Length: 224
Ligand SMILES: NC(=O)c1ccc[n+]([C@@H]2O[C@H](COP(=O)([O-])OP(=O)(O)OC[C@H]3O[C@@H](n4cnc5c(N)ncnc54)[C@H](OP(=O)(O)O)[C@@H]3O)[C@@H](O)[C@H]2O)c1
Image 1 (tube, rainbow, N blue to C red):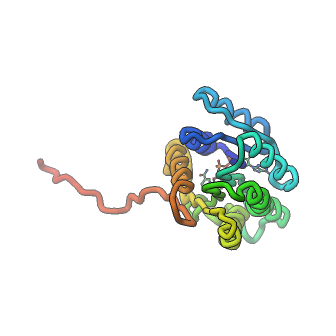
Image 2 (image 1 turned 120 degrees about the horizontal axis):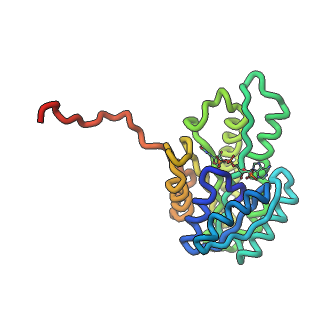
Image 3 (image 1 turned 135 degrees about the vertical axis):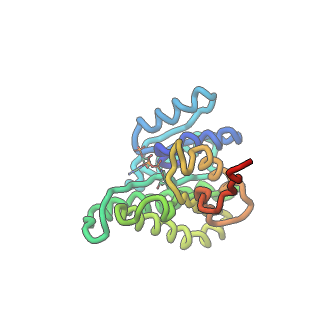
């Protein structure tokens, strides 16, 4: 998993660990790596790790290759890193756009490029890209992120046929709601969704949205 993040990274890695997978994480900071390892060590799960900035494609490639070798080869790669800097469409700085796209889109491409070589001839070879739906954040205040996630989704569509021809499944996981312990999307539910996105025999886009509560709720009569 590249960029485990704070919202559901530990839960996602744990979910795959419980399925018997050897686990690996690439993160920008050593602190994140330590946090994930400590959380899972208590449960007997060990996590191989490397530190790399996804905007340094050579460093990222080296980190993914090292972790892959340490866990005995790659089967699933999850690209989960994101950068979000607040800003509105008509005032956001070009530099903010460039930084955001470097993490959300170009970093994902670099990850796919190195993963493709490692996934050749691997059974069930899969790449999962984390995207977001329009309900997650108001686009107005997170313009750069909205464009970045749209770019990531477009990248997936454009890359899918090339990877499919090599026997590699490229799937997007769309989280269409905020993730947090109090919901509306809960970390364990998101982790399970990421497992299903790998385990499903077919499908390209795996969307998870909160259950809608706007349907009529049956009312008891006032006098019973
Ligand atoms: N949380 C939500 O409500 C929600 C909803 C929809 C979709 N999502 C998506 O789910 C994913 C995780 O969300 P989150 O809330 O857990 O995000 P987060 O806490 O902000 O985590 C982002 C991750 O990206 C890593 N990262 C950022 N810049 C990097 C760089 N230059 N090089 C390497 N790693 C870098 C961070 O590394 P460090 O740990 O080292 O800082 C962190 O692990 C994201 O793709 C997000 O868009 C989240």
